[in-house]
Length: 115
View 1 (cartoon, one colour):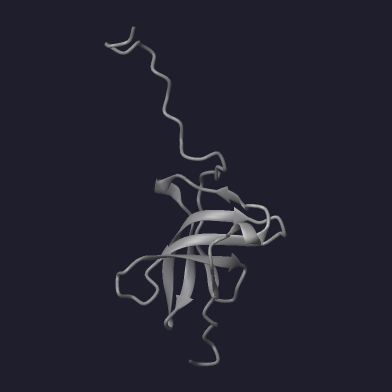
View 2: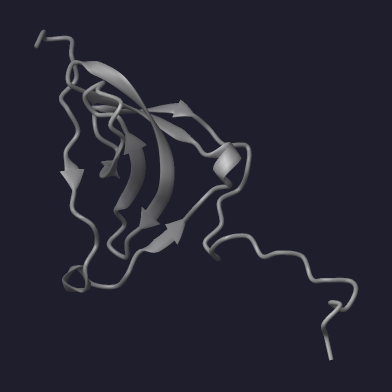
């Protein structure tokens, strides 16, 4: 490792009840997720964000999908933001949601088998 290389970021374990109140979880549409660049195994790795978790104590944690070693095996990792080994790789144009997956539109006509 040279003096110019950043330090690999520290991955966290998932939240558990022993950690206090559950974090507020934000997600983006699958086609417009932001992404981080994660320094791992001597290279910047592209890591799409699966969720952002805002904890009661003020910590911000990003869950990303990352090929950490270049083997094409993608893993889910949690990283507290900010850290020297993390950078913004892509921003989303969509606003995140904390209300879960999108809701399908209401049917305009009754189903053929409706009573």
